[in-house]
Image 1 (cartoon, helix red, strand yellow):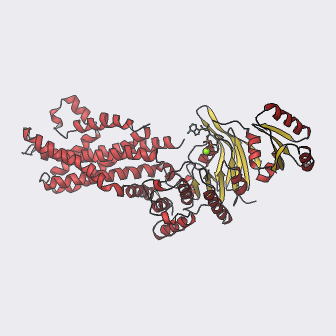
Image 2: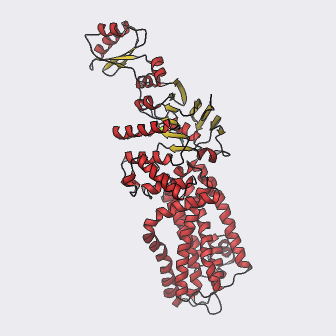
Length: 258
Length: 309
Ligand SMILES: Nc1ncnc2c1ncn2[C@@H]1O[C@H](COP(=O)(O)OP(=O)(O)OP(=O)(O)O)[C@@H](O)[C@H]1O
Ligand SMILES: [Mg+2]
């Protein structure tokens, strides 16, 4: 039986997973090292000098930071895989071309690659969660939802990364994306300081960044305050996901079917 | 007559301002090996890309298995064809066996069926002992064979082969030919491009010669040879002196038949009308080779000798 959309997506996902298996150790160290370092260095190192109580109710800085680091770890893992990784498959390795000669189409290729990037994001996010739990930074039972949050955040940034990859002419192009988009989001999405401390216009801009909603959702789950606001953040993320998936399918198609 | 496997009519494709396929008509019949020949840039790969859904058609009609090539039926078509592209696109991150196994999954072949099929194909491609090796460790010929094996994973009824033997040594090429003949005997139709005229002569039942996006000749290899160059060719070595070459050419012209001056020799094409013995006797004083006409003579006659692109 020719695979349908879901079956095809999983085939592509499996192809990516199989090719990653031999690198998994190196890849995991890379994906986990950075967020854990950030948590320890900034949370405990810098945190001792930060005299704020951002979460209210006596929450320490490391505790404030952890859910944000989790969201950004998911963002980074997914973004790297969906730009560098997918671009290689789309161009140099011609993996997409090889798959397109079979009944699997562009929609499944984009979905499968995005799902794979999001899988790596989930692994990264979960590892950060385990560290945070071990350090006593996360206590609410709602934190069980955080791997799922990492998956959604991963899908959002994976599809965004695929849009970028579909337009890239060379690897250099991703330098701009990472310094101008990803890094900006990293610093201005409420990971390191509460958005309330920004002037009104800057706050308005920050709320336009997908990572801001990812951080807010993550923080709500970590704090156990999953309510209407959290659903709203989830809604925004799902909207961005839907839009960038549709765009990625279009642009990848335009690049490969000529 | 049975319905054709591929039917193309008035096929056109334009890139920017440049039309690279300019109204091409052909059919591939069941169980037939159909050749697409032509110099570099003639539009062979583009034609194949249209057929396999990689390049949208600008004008004309194209159907495979009676289904129009287009978004509606592309899955049904692709599930029944096997494609070996001109540019090798094996998965470098996977082993030889995994390449086939993963490819099988794209067609919905899984589990024990997939493993059995992979074992069969590894034997077919003479790669069983390399099953666990990675792609970058294979030689060019092994990669080519694997690409062919991969194209067969879904037991296609139509095999699309874009230069299947380019870069292979004679042994590997003969192995591939043998495999393709086996497939043909089993009823698989083939669309093949090649720059090796001997390959086309050996494998193709019918072929077309393309040039600048147009089909300029069509027929069986034997028909084409007889129609465009005749049965036999006499090649006379003349050395580098153009005066000497002109003298020999004039002598040949006087004997009848078409004459061509190329580099350091003169070619005299003998059609059925000319009496080969008489001609050879008349030219006895020259250094000559007498041989059967080949598809290569047809190709060069039709598409000229100057380099493309
Ligand atoms: N994607 C593309 N964009 C622009 N031009 C293209 C594209 N693909 C092919 N062409 C042009 O179309 C023409 C035909 O190319 P094609 O690859 O079909 O030739 P070919 O007959 O397969 O040649 P070869 O024997 O070298 O493989 C060439 O001039 C090529 O430059
Ligand atoms: Mg070609």
